[in-house]
Image 1 (cartoon, rainbow, N blue to C red):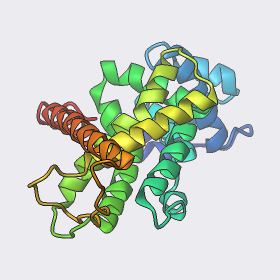
Image 2: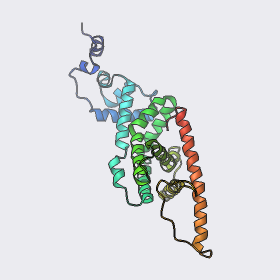
Image 3: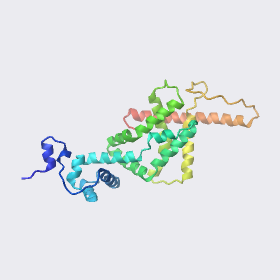
Image 4: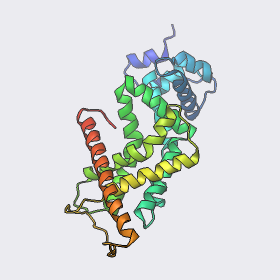
Length: 276
């Protein structure tokens, strides 16, 4: 009597993949993962069955189980492929750097916002948000596979360009998270909710958020600076730039306060175990 190859492999303690046997041609892993991810995105994890995936791909159920073992492993493999296809490589971010830090952050911000607001990015954002609310480990998985790399790059950028190197890297990571939360998440989250923006509005938001982030890092008078900027030339009492400078200093103080509050809120979430 013939035995089921997968059950036979499991009973003998062999890897499930070893139970595969020759059969009809099947999809490549890339095609399988792309089609599975499409179904997961449309119907959610719970609403997508292995039977539905086999029907959509024309692949035998035993082949899917041989490759991935169960639906959860297949979902994570499909999610990882989607993240790898979507993620902006660190090399591209580094290539956007200029001598001017504000211009560098504007370029990086535009790049990240455009990436997450394209169809693949919004699709990934929606499914991870939906599944993370029910299964927090999916949020952790997505963070480790994608966002964590971008945070590490930004933290290194801030340490290199703002300094000093003696500041713990965790502090720069908090600044990186604040940058992503303010510059990147704002427009993309609203778009994922169904709101629409034209490109001019999106770019205006990016410029505003980058300047909020940049000038929020400028310390108030009497506070030590990491890398103090050169002092501006003195302005006379009748100089129109004098009033403008005073206004800018006051605005910088306000923006700094907002940034600190956002970073403290993020730290509080992390302490409660809610990953950003």
